[in-house]
Image 1: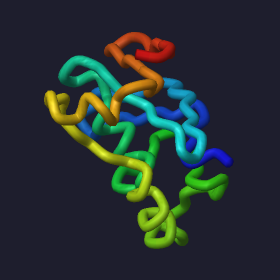
Image 2: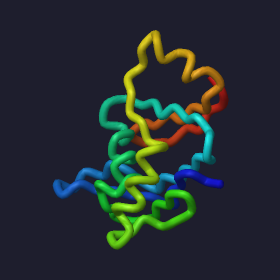
Image 3: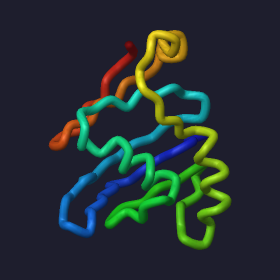
Image 4: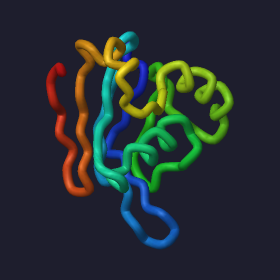
Amino acid sequence: MKAIETHELHYQFQDGTLALKGINFQAEKGERIILLGANGAGKSTLFKCQNGIYTPTKGEVYVEEEKVTKSNLEKIRQKANQYLWLTRLREDTKEWFDNANVVIYTRKKQYLGGKI
């Protein structure tokens, strides 16, 4: 089962800054994914779209194969919060990252990598 999935996700801030452009992302239930990228690459914006804090400008977000909409936000957030964790790399988190998939974002491109 897919835990979280996005289709052609776009997000543009009110000042016109395009933070996400056409992001296709999926994570299977139980899968570990590390999202890496420079400051301003869109990592936090992606998380905020995935748990309904931000409404995408274009595209769709699914949590456990249910489309995120304004009418189901509370239910979606309860589900999404079990999957979405923001953390900084520290020595004591190395064990969690072993055998995780890597996704790297830059301002211009999404790179889907393999295992660490």
